[in-house]
Image (cartoon, rainbow, N blue to C red):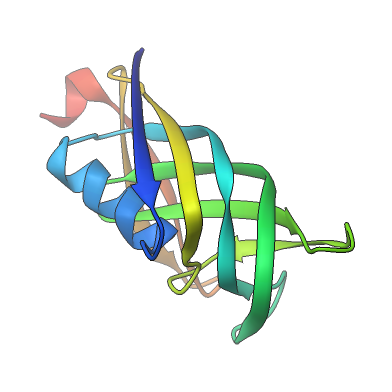
Length: 135
């Protein structure tokens, strides 16, 4: 297992930045360990929904987890507003970093992750292969 850590700046898109990092580092199977930071506006997909919820205002990330593959990431986030109300869902493009985001990822070289469309769920789902059998 290899750990990756990087910091994003005000105005960066969290999902796009994580996906760009995964591509640049050629991570084949990764996990989000943690991310400390906040958003100035967010876009989430809620459970079972095909549409996105656009949220205005400032939010603090209170929890984040997900799987990372070369052809896409699946990340869930919980965040709180100024009143401490928590909202969560599927992290989407448009979650813009407010001030900073400290991102820590793990890379597991025993596996290769990929995403493929699943007709039963209607979404791109995780596929897992042993790294020794996939190259």
